[in-house]
Length: 477
Image 1 (cartoon, one colour):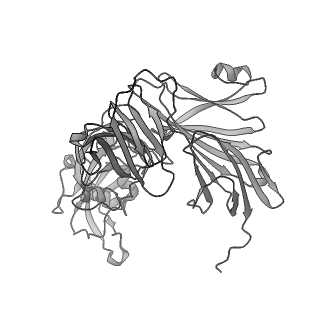
Image 2 (image 1 turned 120 degrees about the vertical axis):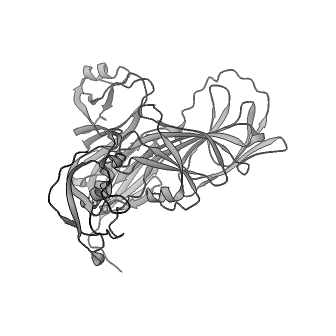
Image 3 (image 1 turned 135 degrees about the horizontal axis):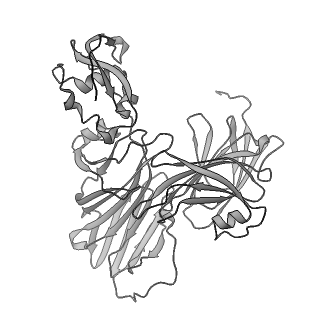
C-alpha cells in the first residue's frame, strides 16, 4: 500500500434518503481488493474503511494489511481516502454477493458402526465471481473431526477455520443462522469471472448416531442427501442388504462395496442403506464400472436462429491425467466448426487452439477411430498436468449442421445424441419449446431465453429430438 497527501473530497451513502457528505483529509491509496471494489456502494467508502479505525480516527496503514495481502490481490485501482472527520452513516456499507457453488459430489466411507462414524470427502466448486472464501456448513447433530481442505487444482492444503453462522451470513451464505457452524475456507485464488471456479475438497469425519447405527447385526445408513451426486462405501467385510434409492453398485479396488447415484430430482434423496457382515471372496473383479455420479463433463448448447443451422457450445471437463497437455475434439461428420476457444476455469487463462485434419488428427489423438483424410479436429493446448494437480477446462466452439438443426415450415427442429450425463440446450431468443423427446427441467436464462437441462444418471446415450416455435406476440391473458 502506498500513500501521499492530497486535497479533500466527499462520498455519499448508499441510501439516497440518508445521503450525507463525509469530508476526508485525503490520502491517495493503491487499494487492491476485488471483492470490495465490485460490491461496495462507493469506492471511496471502501478505501476509507480500509484505513479508518472504529473511532473514526486515522488507522495505521500497516493495520489494514489483511485487506491487501498478496493472496487477495487481483486488480488494482487508485482511490482517494483518508481520515474521517465526520461520522459515516451505517447505510454506507458493502453489498456482499450471495455465495454460489457448483459441481458438488460427496463420497461417504462408513467406518465403525459402534462409534457411528463415517468419513466424508466433499468436492465442490466455489462459483461466486471474485470470491476469496467459501463456507461449508457443519450438519446439525453431527460432531466433526479430522478436518482438512485441499485446492483441487494444485493438490495443496488450504487454510480454514470453524466459524459461527453469523460470519457465514456476512460472507454471503443465504439462510445461515446464529449458532450454526461453518468451515470457512480461504481459497487459493479469487474465483475467475465468466464461469470460473475455485475447486476445493473438504474432508472430515462425522460422528452421527441418528444417521449411522447398528440394529441386530445390520448396519443402517439413513440420511437425507441434498448434494445431487453421492457415493456411499460400506465398511470392509460387509455386503449390501438393501438400498432404497436407485444406484450403481460398484466394487472398490480393495473389495469394499459402494453404491453411487445421481439425484436428478429437485428434492433431497432420502437414502436408506443397509449392510451385514459376511465372508465373500475378495478376488479382483473382471468388470470395471464407470462411476456415473463422479463424471466431470458438462455441455451447454446455445442455438442460433434455426435458419442459420448454427449453434455454439461450451464443454467443461476436468483433466487429471499426469502429463496431459492437449485436448482433441473431433468434429462430427456433417458439421462445420468455427470460432474455437478454450479457457482454464481455475485461473481464467486462455488456451491456444489449432485446427488439424487427416493424419494430423491421428498424430494428435492416436486412439481416435474412423479417422480419414476428411476428418477435422480442434486441438487445444495447455500446460502439462503435474502430479497431484488437475485442470478444469472449458472448450467453446460453434457448429453449423444443416442435417441436425433446421427450420421446417415455422418449426425449429434440433436433433442430437447426448452421451454425457449433464447436458443443457438454450433456445434462440423469442422461441418456446413445443416438444422434447427426453425428459428435461425447464428454466429461463438471465436474458430470458428458454433453457432445458437433461441429466442422465444411466450409462446409455440420449437420443434427443427438440422442437420449438417462435413467440409471435406475448400476452398477459
